[in-house]
Image (cartoon, rainbow, N blue to C red):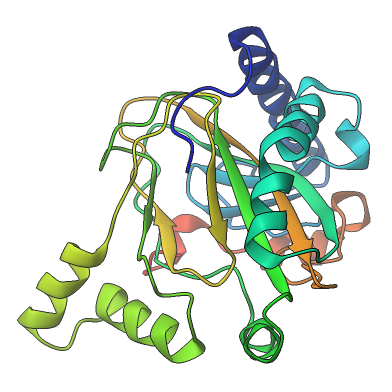
Length: 258
């Protein structure tokens, strides 16, 4: 983690604006096919409403010339690539995707999870160079244990460690497990334009966004030929039918936190 700004404030502000513009545009597209952009739990290739008032959106080809792309390219080239080269040796570093997570006031705490599927744990265990990394670049200042992202350090070392940390965080069987999970979890402070770099296998979850909008730019990097192909579905908004849209549940119908 690098908790101090790595780029100028003007680029941070322009990146936040490009994310807000992209989200508004996608909301219009969802409404045009009959969906409710605020109240439905929809999953499209361009955007996933993973939790009420928290959106995960891809910003690749459609936003290739935005400030967001400049931000990601700059931080990957100057900071992330050297870190990963030292961490995994001379493995080839590839930028898999660029995106953003935008949480608005009222977004509840996210269910702890890992971004990696089980197959990735197995591949990484057999080849230490086969890795996926998420590079979070907050565009507002994050206070420690505030409204940023909570991590369970060490939960990435094996699928067993990840499952144990997830179990303690999501469904502790004893009071001791609940206390242990709370003691393990860390939500680091990071100023806008800083960097939180983490392994895809680590258990983490966004904290509640109580009083403000919180945009985070991210770029996914891989080494050793790893590929991120599990976090967004293939179906695009423009291809959605009325039946597709109707199948997306409303948040009021969902009785658990995702």
